[in-house]
Image 1 (cartoon, one colour):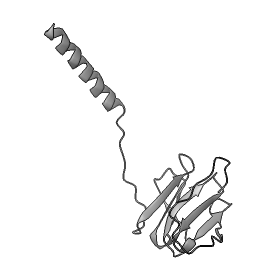
Image 2 (tube, helix red, strand yellow; image 1 turned 90 degrees about the horizontal axis):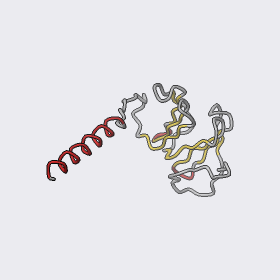
Image 3 (cartoon, one colour; image 1 turned 90 degrees about the vertical axis):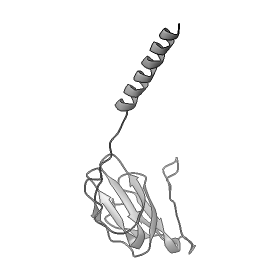
Image 4 (cartoon, one colour; image 1 turned 135 degrees about the horizontal axis):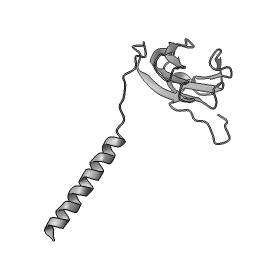
Length: 130
């Protein structure tokens, strides 16, 4: 009886180990080409994404994160970036900063937030509005 139990236990352990190796993912270090601390990331799809951070760091990728292009918009620390689609997005940060784009980041316009507090997060509602 014990021999059968051990065989079953070893079989279960082997199955679990095989499943773990099947689902193991590897991570690749990507160079952002900035020394600023990065704080927020949003991927619009598997290729297009945005990262924001200190000192107004805003970076854009169209290669799934393999290369990042800086987008100079403001000198304030930025904490969160979110896009509702490939064209329309916002980035928020210190001193109540809210910047909005409707043309995939070509132009950014400041939105009045009526606060001077740090804005740490941004989100898109279920209705697709900021």
